[in-house]
Image 1 (spheres, one colour):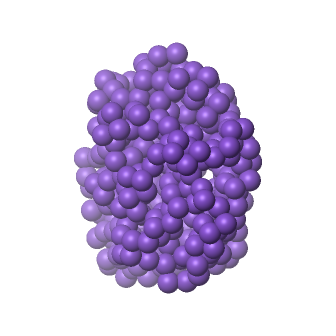
Image 2: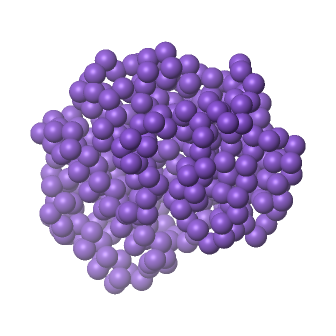
Length: 356
């Protein structure tokens, strides 16, 4: 592949880093070993207090393609926004500081984009969750090779990519910088769901393709206890993201499409069950009276009732909760969730984009 051209890299790789000394070197080295050499890595560190910045500076000293900026106290979205402002490539790709790429990822994504003049190329990724109990088996979100002939073809088929958790994360995707700038897409703090940039690109993307297989990997460490603030953040994120997805489908003119709406409602119910399990499942620190109050507020909404009436969740455990949710019986929902969680923690079959 072509050599690095400082004034005209083919791809600008954007990264926000924070306290990732155990993973960031592998991440950067997976880029340095790419078969496509003409890229730049624009890293904005959000105020690491460990050895992350020291490692990044050492890597940048030996490789002029690595550009490091420190911006203490900024959020991930703000850090990626700063990185985007510095991007000079024809294409954009976002890397996580705990992710790594296959050697041909950039070449394969760019080849697909240039071969069909695409605004967006969607790659596959794997996700492994690392908890106190150890590392869970990998979940892979990938699809077959495809270039959608028209914008309508992509929109009509997008529900399948949403359902498998492949479409929302920024990772493993190649974006045309010209398209991003033309449509004013930015890394926004709007909402709490973290997928605003991708949703902004999806609204009006015309030429979209899928790169088959898996080209990117993430091993994400989960931390935190199931206390009230954590539960509430997760529920607010669910509500914000569901609203954004409904708005996207209204913009697409597909709010009456049966397959798309069933996907959205099933996705909502699965994630709602995950929030309920966080309230009253195994390991919860929420008092029992407070559990019933919170769950009652979650299920006694028009949105939850509509979803419970039409959704077809993949999880057997979540299907068992549909009747008491429709009956607005918070006490029974809590009891059943507690029992299901004791038998098999993680009752909801949530998609990997919840963590990627």
